[in-house]
Image (tube, rainbow, N blue to C red; front, side, top):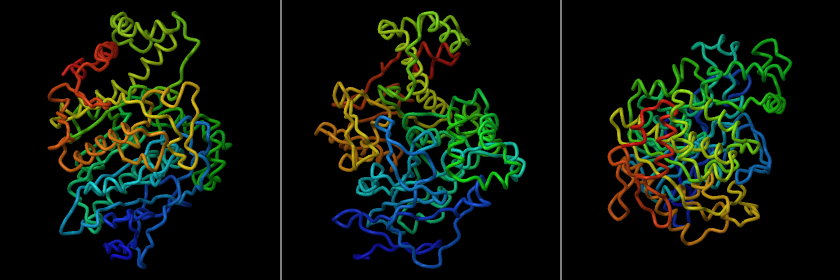
Amino acid sequence: MADRPLVESELGSFEGFWANDQKTVRAFKGIPYAEPPVGHLRFRPPVPKAPINVPLQARNEGSPCWQSQGNDAFVWALGTFPRSEDCLYLNIWTPASADRENLKPVMVWFHGGAHTRSWAHHPLFDGTSFAEQEVILVSVNYRLGPWGFLALPMLSEESEQGASGNYGLLDKIEALRWVQRSIAAFGGDADNVTIFGQSAGSQSVCALMASPLTDGLFHKAIGQSASCLNGFEVDPQGYETGSALLSELDNPSDVAALREVPNQTLLDAALKSNWGARSRITIDGWVLPDTPLVLFQEQARVSIPLLVGSLANEGHLLIPLTVETDQPRFRQFLARTFSRDPTAIEEIEIAYQAEIAEGYGKARHAIETDLFMALGMRHWAALNARSGAPSYVYFMSHVPPACQIYRPDSPELFLEDGARSAGAYHSGDLAFVFNTLNRAGCGWSEEDRALAIKIHQYWANFAKTGRPSREGIDDWPAWSDTGELMIFDVPTKLARDVRHQKLLSLARGLGLDQSIIDR
Protein backbone atom coordinates (compact mmCIF):
# COMPACT_ATOMS: atom_id res chain seq x y z
CA MET A 1 0.00 0.00 0.00
CA ALA A 2 2.91 2.36 0.61
CA ASP A 3 3.71 2.30 -3.11
CA ARG A 4 0.26 2.42 -4.69
CA PRO A 5 -2.97 2.77 -2.73
CA LEU A 6 -5.28 -0.12 -3.56
CA VAL A 7 -8.95 -0.52 -2.61
CA GLU A 8 -10.92 -3.74 -3.00
CA SER A 9 -14.67 -3.29 -3.22
CA GLU A 10 -17.72 -5.25 -4.29
CA LEU A 11 -17.68 -3.34 -7.58
CA GLY A 12 -14.01 -3.88 -8.37
CA SER A 13 -10.41 -3.16 -7.42
CA PHE A 14 -9.14 0.40 -7.74
CA GLU A 15 -5.48 1.43 -7.77
CA GLY A 16 -4.99 5.10 -6.98
CA PHE A 17 -2.11 7.41 -6.08
CA TRP A 18 -0.84 9.53 -3.22
CA ALA A 19 -2.29 13.06 -3.35
CA ASN A 20 0.33 14.66 -1.07
CA ASP A 21 4.02 14.25 -0.35
CA GLN A 22 3.32 13.03 3.17
CA LYS A 23 1.33 10.09 1.78
CA THR A 24 -1.53 10.81 4.16
CA VAL A 25 -4.16 11.23 1.42
CA ARG A 26 -5.10 8.66 -1.21
CA ALA A 27 -6.74 9.75 -4.44
CA PHE A 28 -8.74 7.69 -6.94
CA LYS A 29 -9.83 9.34 -10.16
CA GLY A 30 -11.95 8.36 -13.11
CA ILE A 31 -14.06 5.69 -11.38
CA PRO A 32 -17.12 4.86 -13.52
CA TYR A 33 -20.36 4.84 -11.54
CA ALA A 34 -22.70 4.22 -14.49
CA GLU A 35 -22.50 2.71 -17.94
CA PRO A 36 -21.59 5.19 -20.69
CA PRO A 37 -24.84 7.01 -21.63
CA VAL A 38 -24.29 6.61 -25.35
CA GLY A 39 -26.21 4.99 -28.21
CA HIS A 40 -29.48 3.56 -26.95
CA LEU A 41 -28.70 4.91 -23.44
CA ARG A 42 -28.67 8.56 -24.58
CA PHE A 43 -31.65 10.47 -23.10
CA ARG A 44 -32.31 7.67 -20.62
CA PRO A 45 -31.75 7.30 -16.86
CA PRO A 46 -28.25 6.09 -15.98
CA VAL A 47 -27.60 2.36 -15.80
CA PRO A 48 -25.50 1.31 -12.78
CA LYS A 49 -21.96 0.31 -13.70
CA ALA A 50 -21.46 -3.43 -13.72
CA PRO A 51 -18.71 -4.81 -11.46
CA ILE A 52 -15.24 -4.39 -12.96
CA ASN A 53 -13.45 -7.71 -13.23
CA VAL A 54 -9.90 -6.41 -13.69
CA PRO A 55 -8.08 -3.89 -11.45
CA LEU A 56 -8.83 -0.32 -12.56
CA GLN A 57 -5.96 2.15 -12.75
CA ALA A 58 -7.80 5.01 -11.05
CA ARG A 59 -5.13 7.61 -11.64
CA ASN A 60 -6.56 9.54 -14.60
CA GLU A 61 -9.63 11.74 -14.72
CA GLY A 62 -12.60 10.90 -16.87
CA SER A 63 -13.51 13.23 -19.70
CA PRO A 64 -15.66 16.34 -19.21
CA CYS A 65 -19.18 15.84 -20.50
CA TRP A 66 -20.20 17.42 -23.80
CA GLN A 67 -20.52 21.20 -23.55
CA SER A 68 -19.45 24.45 -25.17
CA GLN A 69 -15.94 25.84 -24.83
CA GLY A 70 -14.44 29.32 -24.83
CA ASN A 71 -12.64 32.14 -23.06
CA ASP A 72 -15.22 34.94 -23.04
CA ALA A 73 -16.96 34.35 -19.73
CA PHE A 74 -15.28 36.62 -17.14
CA VAL A 75 -13.85 34.44 -14.31
CA TRP A 76 -15.78 31.42 -15.63
CA ALA A 77 -13.84 30.96 -18.89
CA LEU A 78 -13.01 27.29 -19.41
CA GLY A 79 -10.70 27.32 -22.42
CA THR A 80 -10.55 24.26 -24.65
CA PHE A 81 -10.57 20.68 -23.43
CA PRO A 82 -11.58 17.17 -24.53
CA ARG A 83 -15.28 16.26 -24.33
CA SER A 84 -17.17 12.98 -24.43
CA GLU A 85 -20.62 11.54 -23.85
CA ASP A 86 -18.79 8.80 -21.93
CA CYS A 87 -18.33 11.01 -18.88
CA LEU A 88 -20.09 9.47 -15.87
CA TYR A 89 -17.10 9.20 -13.57
CA LEU A 90 -16.36 10.21 -10.00
CA ASN A 91 -13.21 10.99 -8.04
CA ILE A 92 -12.35 10.21 -4.41
CA TRP A 93 -9.87 11.68 -1.93
CA THR A 94 -9.64 9.75 1.32
CA PRO A 95 -7.37 9.87 4.40
CA ALA A 96 -4.85 7.05 4.51
CA SER A 97 -6.14 6.28 8.01
CA ALA A 98 -9.67 5.57 6.74
CA ASP A 99 -10.76 1.95 6.39
CA ARG A 100 -13.76 -0.24 7.14
CA GLU A 101 -12.90 -0.14 10.86
CA ASN A 102 -12.28 3.61 10.93
CA LEU A 103 -15.01 5.19 8.81
CA LYS A 104 -14.91 8.89 7.96
CA PRO A 105 -17.70 11.32 7.01
CA VAL A 106 -18.28 11.73 3.28
CA MET A 107 -18.85 14.89 1.23
CA VAL A 108 -20.18 14.60 -2.33
CA TRP A 109 -19.56 17.63 -4.59
CA PHE A 110 -21.73 18.71 -7.53
CA HIS A 111 -20.08 21.43 -9.63
CA GLY A 112 -21.86 24.48 -11.02
CA GLY A 113 -21.96 25.87 -14.54
CA ALA A 114 -25.66 26.46 -15.32
CA HIS A 115 -26.11 22.69 -15.87
CA THR A 116 -24.39 23.27 -19.20
CA ARG A 117 -20.66 23.62 -18.43
CA SER A 118 -17.69 22.57 -16.23
CA TRP A 119 -16.55 19.27 -14.74
CA ALA A 120 -15.82 17.64 -11.39
CA HIS A 121 -12.11 16.88 -11.61
CA HIS A 122 -10.92 20.46 -12.05
CA PRO A 123 -7.97 21.40 -9.78
CA LEU A 124 -10.22 24.04 -8.20
CA PHE A 125 -12.22 21.17 -6.68
CA ASP A 126 -9.25 19.09 -5.53
CA GLY A 127 -10.23 17.20 -2.37
CA THR A 128 -6.81 16.84 -0.74
CA SER A 129 -7.44 19.48 1.92
CA PHE A 130 -10.77 17.92 2.89
CA ALA A 131 -9.09 14.53 3.28
CA GLU A 132 -6.45 16.18 5.46
CA GLN A 133 -9.38 17.29 7.63
CA GLU A 134 -10.41 13.61 7.98
CA VAL A 135 -13.30 13.95 5.53
CA ILE A 136 -13.68 11.89 2.36
CA LEU A 137 -14.39 14.00 -0.72
CA VAL A 138 -16.23 12.60 -3.75
CA SER A 139 -16.67 14.76 -6.85
CA VAL A 140 -19.12 13.76 -9.57
CA ASN A 141 -19.42 14.35 -13.31
CA TYR A 142 -23.00 14.45 -14.57
CA ARG A 143 -24.59 14.97 -17.98
CA LEU A 144 -24.98 18.60 -19.01
CA GLY A 145 -27.03 20.62 -21.47
CA PRO A 146 -29.54 18.72 -23.61
CA TRP A 147 -27.67 15.46 -22.96
CA GLY A 148 -28.59 15.88 -19.30
CA PHE A 149 -31.86 17.78 -19.33
CA LEU A 150 -33.67 17.63 -22.69
CA ALA A 151 -37.39 17.00 -22.16
CA LEU A 152 -39.75 16.04 -24.98
CA PRO A 153 -43.14 14.30 -25.23
CA MET A 154 -41.65 11.52 -27.36
CA LEU A 155 -38.96 10.87 -24.74
CA SER A 156 -41.62 10.74 -22.02
CA GLU A 157 -43.75 8.36 -24.08
CA GLU A 158 -40.97 5.77 -24.27
CA SER A 159 -40.07 6.13 -20.58
CA GLU A 160 -41.34 3.53 -18.11
CA GLN A 161 -41.99 6.39 -15.70
CA GLY A 162 -43.60 8.65 -18.33
CA ALA A 163 -40.90 11.23 -17.65
CA SER A 164 -38.11 12.95 -19.56
CA GLY A 165 -35.38 15.44 -18.74
CA ASN A 166 -33.56 15.52 -15.40
CA TYR A 167 -31.05 12.91 -16.59
CA GLY A 168 -28.33 15.02 -14.97
CA LEU A 169 -30.18 14.83 -11.64
CA LEU A 170 -30.60 11.08 -12.08
CA ASP A 171 -26.85 10.83 -12.68
CA LYS A 172 -26.28 12.48 -9.31
CA ILE A 173 -28.73 10.09 -7.67
CA GLU A 174 -26.94 7.11 -9.24
CA ALA A 175 -23.60 8.45 -7.99
CA LEU A 176 -25.08 8.70 -4.48
CA ARG A 177 -26.29 5.11 -4.78
CA TRP A 178 -22.76 4.12 -5.80
CA VAL A 179 -21.50 5.86 -2.67
CA GLN A 180 -23.96 3.91 -0.53
CA ARG A 181 -22.79 0.63 -2.07
CA SER A 182 -19.06 1.23 -2.25
CA ILE A 183 -17.73 4.07 -0.11
CA ALA A 184 -17.12 1.86 2.95
CA ALA A 185 -14.31 0.14 1.00
CA PHE A 186 -12.61 3.55 0.82
CA GLY A 187 -13.17 4.13 4.55
CA GLY A 188 -16.31 6.24 4.12
CA ASP A 189 -19.34 6.24 6.41
CA ALA A 190 -22.40 5.71 4.19
CA ASP A 191 -24.57 6.85 7.13
CA ASN A 192 -22.88 10.27 7.26
CA VAL A 193 -23.03 11.75 3.76
CA THR A 194 -23.20 15.48 3.03
CA ILE A 195 -24.04 16.70 -0.46
CA PHE A 196 -22.89 20.15 -1.50
CA GLY A 197 -22.73 22.25 -4.63
CA GLN A 198 -22.45 25.77 -5.99
CA SER A 199 -24.69 27.61 -8.48
CA ALA A 200 -26.28 24.88 -10.65
CA GLY A 201 -24.76 22.36 -8.25
CA SER A 202 -26.57 24.09 -5.40
CA GLN A 203 -29.82 24.06 -7.38
CA SER A 204 -29.26 20.32 -7.73
CA VAL A 205 -28.74 19.93 -3.98
CA CYS A 206 -32.04 21.75 -3.44
CA ALA A 207 -33.84 19.58 -6.02
CA LEU A 208 -32.37 16.38 -4.58
CA MET A 209 -33.66 17.38 -1.15
CA ALA A 210 -37.11 17.73 -2.71
CA SER A 211 -37.01 14.49 -4.71
CA PRO A 212 -38.73 11.32 -3.41
CA LEU A 213 -35.98 9.23 -5.07
CA THR A 214 -33.24 10.23 -2.62
CA ASP A 215 -34.42 8.77 0.68
CA GLY A 216 -31.46 7.54 2.71
CA LEU A 217 -28.84 8.69 0.20
CA PHE A 218 -27.56 11.70 2.19
CA HIS A 219 -27.94 13.23 5.63
CA LYS A 220 -26.81 16.87 5.43
CA ALA A 221 -26.66 19.48 2.65
CA ILE A 222 -24.78 22.65 1.70
CA GLY A 223 -26.01 25.05 -0.96
CA GLN A 224 -23.81 27.84 -2.32
CA SER A 225 -25.32 30.65 -4.39
CA ALA A 226 -28.55 29.22 -5.84
CA SER A 227 -31.76 27.52 -4.74
CA CYS A 228 -34.38 25.67 -6.79
CA LEU A 229 -37.48 27.47 -5.54
CA ASN A 230 -38.15 29.57 -8.64
CA GLY A 231 -37.87 29.30 -12.40
CA PHE A 232 -40.76 26.92 -13.05
CA GLU A 233 -43.40 29.52 -13.83
CA VAL A 234 -42.96 29.06 -17.60
CA ASP A 235 -42.66 25.66 -19.32
CA PRO A 236 -42.18 23.61 -16.12
CA GLN A 237 -42.02 20.33 -18.08
CA GLY A 238 -39.45 21.71 -20.50
CA TYR A 239 -41.43 20.61 -23.55
CA GLU A 240 -41.60 24.04 -25.20
CA THR A 241 -37.87 24.66 -25.07
CA GLY A 242 -37.22 21.04 -26.01
CA SER A 243 -39.44 21.38 -29.06
CA ALA A 244 -37.66 24.61 -30.07
CA LEU A 245 -34.36 22.72 -29.98
CA LEU A 246 -35.91 19.91 -31.98
CA SER A 247 -36.98 22.32 -34.70
CA GLU A 248 -33.34 23.41 -35.12
CA LEU A 249 -32.58 19.75 -35.86
CA ASP A 250 -35.28 19.68 -38.57
CA ASN A 251 -37.52 17.64 -36.26
CA PRO A 252 -36.09 14.11 -36.22
CA SER A 253 -38.89 11.64 -36.92
CA ASP A 254 -38.42 9.54 -33.81
CA VAL A 255 -36.29 8.97 -30.72
CA ALA A 256 -33.97 6.60 -32.56
CA ALA A 257 -33.09 9.36 -35.01
CA LEU A 258 -32.62 11.84 -32.18
CA ARG A 259 -30.12 9.50 -30.53
CA GLU A 260 -28.04 9.51 -33.71
CA VAL A 261 -27.63 13.30 -33.88
CA PRO A 262 -23.90 14.17 -33.67
CA ASN A 263 -22.78 15.92 -30.49
CA GLN A 264 -21.71 19.17 -32.15
CA THR A 265 -24.98 19.34 -34.06
CA LEU A 266 -26.93 18.88 -30.85
CA LEU A 267 -24.87 21.57 -29.11
CA ASP A 268 -25.36 24.00 -32.03
CA ALA A 269 -29.13 23.43 -31.93
CA ALA A 270 -29.20 24.11 -28.18
CA LEU A 271 -27.33 27.38 -28.67
CA LYS A 272 -29.42 28.51 -31.67
CA SER A 273 -32.73 27.76 -29.92
CA ASN A 274 -31.57 29.42 -26.68
CA TRP A 275 -32.49 26.16 -24.95
CA GLY A 276 -30.39 26.95 -21.88
CA ALA A 277 -32.16 30.22 -21.06
CA ARG A 278 -34.71 28.54 -18.77
CA SER A 279 -34.26 26.23 -15.79
CA ARG A 280 -32.74 23.01 -17.03
CA ILE A 281 -34.40 21.08 -14.20
CA THR A 282 -37.94 20.02 -15.11
CA ILE A 283 -41.05 18.99 -13.22
CA ASP A 284 -41.22 15.52 -14.70
CA GLY A 285 -43.63 13.81 -12.30
CA TRP A 286 -40.99 11.29 -11.22
CA VAL A 287 -37.73 12.84 -10.03
CA LEU A 288 -39.80 15.89 -9.10
CA PRO A 289 -43.53 15.18 -8.78
CA ASP A 290 -44.19 18.89 -8.17
CA THR A 291 -42.18 22.08 -7.93
CA PRO A 292 -39.61 22.03 -5.13
CA LEU A 293 -41.28 25.07 -3.57
CA VAL A 294 -44.58 23.22 -3.21
CA LEU A 295 -42.87 20.08 -1.92
CA PHE A 296 -41.00 22.10 0.71
CA GLN A 297 -44.08 24.14 1.65
CA GLU A 298 -46.12 20.98 2.13
CA GLN A 299 -43.26 19.47 4.14
CA ALA A 300 -43.43 16.50 1.83
CA ARG A 301 -39.73 15.86 2.33
CA VAL A 302 -37.78 15.15 5.51
CA SER A 303 -35.59 18.10 6.42
CA ILE A 304 -31.91 17.74 7.30
CA PRO A 305 -29.18 20.06 8.65
CA LEU A 306 -28.65 22.66 5.94
CA LEU A 307 -25.98 25.31 5.36
CA VAL A 308 -26.63 27.91 2.63
CA GLY A 309 -25.45 31.33 1.60
CA SER A 310 -24.45 33.81 -1.08
CA LEU A 311 -21.95 36.54 -1.89
CA ALA A 312 -22.30 40.32 -1.88
CA ASN A 313 -21.94 40.87 -5.63
CA GLU A 314 -23.38 37.70 -7.17
CA GLY A 315 -25.05 39.49 -10.07
CA HIS A 316 -21.87 41.06 -11.45
CA LEU A 317 -21.72 39.94 -15.11
CA LEU A 318 -23.93 36.98 -14.21
CA ILE A 319 -27.35 38.64 -14.33
CA PRO A 320 -27.83 40.95 -17.34
CA LEU A 321 -27.79 44.68 -16.61
CA THR A 322 -30.70 46.29 -18.48
CA VAL A 323 -29.01 49.63 -19.06
CA GLU A 324 -31.91 51.15 -21.02
CA THR A 325 -34.16 50.99 -17.95
CA ASP A 326 -35.71 54.40 -17.21
CA GLN A 327 -38.26 55.27 -14.52
CA PRO A 328 -41.36 54.08 -16.44
CA ARG A 329 -39.68 50.79 -17.37
CA PHE A 330 -38.47 50.38 -13.79
CA ARG A 331 -42.01 50.90 -12.47
CA GLN A 332 -43.30 48.37 -15.01
CA PHE A 333 -40.66 45.87 -13.81
CA LEU A 334 -41.73 46.40 -10.18
CA ALA A 335 -45.43 46.08 -11.01
CA ARG A 336 -44.86 42.88 -12.98
CA THR A 337 -42.53 41.29 -10.42
CA PHE A 338 -44.43 42.22 -7.28
CA SER A 339 -48.02 41.86 -8.44
CA ARG A 340 -48.95 39.77 -5.39
CA ASP A 341 -48.70 42.81 -3.15
CA PRO A 342 -48.34 46.08 -5.11
CA THR A 343 -48.52 48.05 -1.87
CA ALA A 344 -44.97 46.85 -1.15
CA ILE A 345 -43.54 48.65 -4.19
CA GLU A 346 -43.11 51.95 -2.34
CA GLU A 347 -41.30 50.10 0.44
CA ILE A 348 -39.02 48.43 -2.14
CA GLU A 349 -38.19 51.79 -3.74
CA ILE A 350 -37.26 53.21 -0.34
CA ALA A 351 -35.11 50.18 0.48
CA TYR A 352 -33.23 50.50 -2.82
CA GLN A 353 -33.03 54.28 -2.95
CA ALA A 354 -29.20 54.25 -3.00
CA GLU A 355 -29.22 52.00 -6.08
CA ILE A 356 -31.94 54.09 -7.74
CA ALA A 357 -29.73 57.16 -7.27
CA GLU A 358 -27.08 55.38 -9.38
CA GLY A 359 -29.58 54.59 -12.11
CA TYR A 360 -32.76 52.60 -12.62
CA GLY A 361 -30.87 49.89 -14.51
CA LYS A 362 -28.57 49.32 -11.54
CA ALA A 363 -31.53 49.29 -9.15
CA ARG A 364 -33.30 46.65 -11.23
CA HIS A 365 -30.09 44.61 -11.38
CA ALA A 366 -29.68 44.79 -7.59
CA ILE A 367 -33.27 43.69 -7.00
CA GLU A 368 -33.02 40.79 -9.47
CA THR A 369 -29.78 39.68 -7.84
CA ASP A 370 -31.25 39.75 -4.33
CA LEU A 371 -34.38 37.91 -5.47
CA PHE A 372 -32.32 35.10 -6.96
CA MET A 373 -29.56 34.89 -4.37
CA ALA A 374 -29.89 36.41 -0.90
CA LEU A 375 -33.69 36.08 -0.64
CA GLY A 376 -33.78 32.71 -2.39
CA MET A 377 -31.21 31.17 -0.07
CA ARG A 378 -32.94 32.44 3.08
CA HIS A 379 -36.29 31.22 1.79
CA TRP A 380 -34.78 27.76 1.34
CA ALA A 381 -33.27 27.88 4.83
CA ALA A 382 -36.58 28.97 6.35
CA LEU A 383 -38.59 26.22 4.64
CA ASN A 384 -36.07 23.65 5.84
CA ALA A 385 -36.21 24.99 9.40
CA ARG A 386 -40.01 24.79 9.45
CA SER A 387 -39.66 21.03 9.05
CA GLY A 388 -37.57 20.87 12.19
CA ALA A 389 -33.92 20.82 11.12
CA PRO A 390 -31.33 23.56 11.76
CA SER A 391 -30.40 25.92 8.94
CA TYR A 392 -27.15 27.90 8.90
CA VAL A 393 -26.76 30.94 6.65
CA TYR A 394 -23.65 32.82 5.52
CA PHE A 395 -22.94 35.95 3.49
CA MET A 396 -19.53 36.51 1.92
CA SER A 397 -18.56 40.17 1.61
CA HIS A 398 -14.80 39.61 1.42
CA VAL A 399 -13.61 40.56 -2.06
CA PRO A 400 -11.30 38.04 -3.75
CA PRO A 401 -9.08 38.88 -6.72
CA ALA A 402 -10.88 38.33 -10.02
CA CYS A 403 -9.01 35.65 -11.97
CA GLN A 404 -9.87 32.97 -14.48
CA ILE A 405 -10.33 30.41 -11.73
CA TYR A 406 -10.87 27.57 -14.21
CA ARG A 407 -7.68 28.42 -16.13
CA PRO A 408 -4.73 27.65 -13.83
CA ASP A 409 -2.53 27.69 -16.94
CA SER A 410 -3.53 31.30 -17.65
CA PRO A 411 -5.38 32.78 -14.64
CA GLU A 412 -4.71 36.49 -15.16
CA LEU A 413 -7.80 38.59 -15.82
CA PHE A 414 -6.99 42.26 -16.29
CA LEU A 415 -9.71 44.60 -14.97
CA GLU A 416 -9.44 48.32 -15.60
CA ASP A 417 -10.01 49.21 -11.94
CA GLY A 418 -7.85 46.48 -10.45
CA ALA A 419 -8.05 42.79 -9.63
CA ARG A 420 -10.47 43.30 -6.72
CA SER A 421 -12.83 45.70 -8.48
CA ALA A 422 -15.46 43.03 -9.30
CA GLY A 423 -16.59 42.71 -5.69
CA ALA A 424 -17.48 39.38 -4.09
CA TYR A 425 -18.45 37.84 -7.41
CA HIS A 426 -20.36 34.64 -8.19
CA SER A 427 -17.97 31.68 -7.70
CA GLY A 428 -15.54 33.80 -5.68
CA ASP A 429 -16.02 31.44 -2.73
CA LEU A 430 -14.97 28.21 -4.46
CA ALA A 431 -11.23 28.29 -3.79
CA PHE A 432 -12.00 29.25 -0.18
CA VAL A 433 -14.36 26.32 0.35
CA PHE A 434 -11.87 23.79 -1.07
CA ASN A 435 -8.82 25.63 0.29
CA THR A 436 -7.27 25.38 -3.17
CA LEU A 437 -5.77 28.86 -3.43
CA ASN A 438 -2.51 27.15 -4.36
CA ARG A 439 -4.18 25.42 -7.32
CA ALA A 440 -6.45 28.08 -8.84
CA GLY A 441 -6.78 31.81 -9.20
CA CYS A 442 -4.04 34.41 -8.72
CA GLY A 443 -3.01 37.32 -6.53
CA TRP A 444 -4.04 35.74 -3.23
CA SER A 445 -3.11 37.60 -0.04
CA GLU A 446 -2.36 36.29 3.43
CA GLU A 447 -5.83 37.50 4.48
CA ASP A 448 -7.33 35.39 1.68
CA ARG A 449 -5.39 32.34 2.85
CA ALA A 450 -6.43 32.75 6.48
CA LEU A 451 -10.10 33.13 5.51
CA ALA A 452 -9.89 30.08 3.24
CA ILE A 453 -8.63 27.94 6.11
CA LYS A 454 -11.53 29.07 8.30
CA ILE A 455 -14.27 28.58 5.67
CA HIS A 456 -12.81 25.19 4.73
CA GLN A 457 -12.87 24.11 8.38
CA TYR A 458 -16.50 25.21 8.77
CA TRP A 459 -17.52 23.02 5.80
CA ALA A 460 -15.56 20.03 7.13
CA ASN A 461 -17.00 20.45 10.63
CA PHE A 462 -20.52 20.59 9.23
CA ALA A 463 -19.92 17.35 7.35
CA LYS A 464 -18.71 15.68 10.51
CA THR A 465 -21.37 16.84 12.98
CA GLY A 466 -24.10 18.87 11.25
CA ARG A 467 -22.71 22.01 12.95
CA PRO A 468 -20.10 24.25 11.29
CA SER A 469 -18.38 25.39 14.49
CA ARG A 470 -16.30 23.44 16.96
CA GLU A 471 -13.93 24.21 19.81
CA GLY A 472 -11.13 26.48 18.65
CA ILE A 473 -13.05 28.16 15.83
CA ASP A 474 -15.51 31.07 15.99
CA ASP A 475 -18.98 30.00 17.11
CA TRP A 476 -21.61 29.86 14.38
CA PRO A 477 -25.13 29.31 15.73
CA ALA A 478 -28.03 28.22 13.55
CA TRP A 479 -29.72 31.12 11.76
CA SER A 480 -32.98 29.27 12.26
CA ASP A 481 -32.48 29.70 16.04
CA THR A 482 -30.94 33.16 16.35
CA GLY A 483 -31.44 35.00 13.04
CA GLU A 484 -27.68 35.55 12.86
CA LEU A 485 -25.71 35.06 9.65
CA MET A 486 -22.00 34.32 9.48
CA ILE A 487 -20.29 37.10 7.55
CA PHE A 488 -17.24 35.88 5.69
CA ASP A 489 -14.93 38.86 5.75
CA VAL A 490 -11.71 39.76 7.52
CA PRO A 491 -12.42 39.27 10.34
CA THR A 492 -15.45 36.99 10.23
CA LYS A 493 -18.39 38.05 12.36
CA LEU A 494 -22.03 37.30 13.13
CA ALA A 495 -24.73 39.78 12.10
CA ARG A 496 -28.50 39.99 11.83
CA ASP A 497 -28.97 43.04 9.62
CA VAL A 498 -27.65 41.91 6.23
CA ARG A 499 -29.78 43.63 3.54
CA HIS A 500 -32.56 43.12 6.06
CA GLN A 501 -35.01 45.82 4.97
CA LYS A 502 -34.37 45.10 1.31
CA LEU A 503 -35.20 41.42 1.67
CA LEU A 504 -38.21 42.14 3.90
CA SER A 505 -39.66 44.45 1.25
CA LEU A 506 -39.02 41.90 -1.52
CA ALA A 507 -40.62 39.12 0.48
CA ARG A 508 -43.67 41.26 1.10
CA GLY A 509 -43.94 42.14 -2.59
CA LEU A 510 -43.87 38.46 -3.49
CA GLY A 511 -46.59 37.66 -0.97
CA LEU A 512 -44.22 35.58 1.16
CA ASP A 513 -44.38 35.19 4.91
CA GLN A 514 -41.91 37.76 6.21
CA SER A 515 -40.79 35.32 8.89
CA ILE A 516 -38.48 33.86 6.24
CA ILE A 517 -36.39 36.99 6.90
CA ASP A 518 -37.36 37.96 10.45
CA ARG A 519 -36.31 35.16 12.74
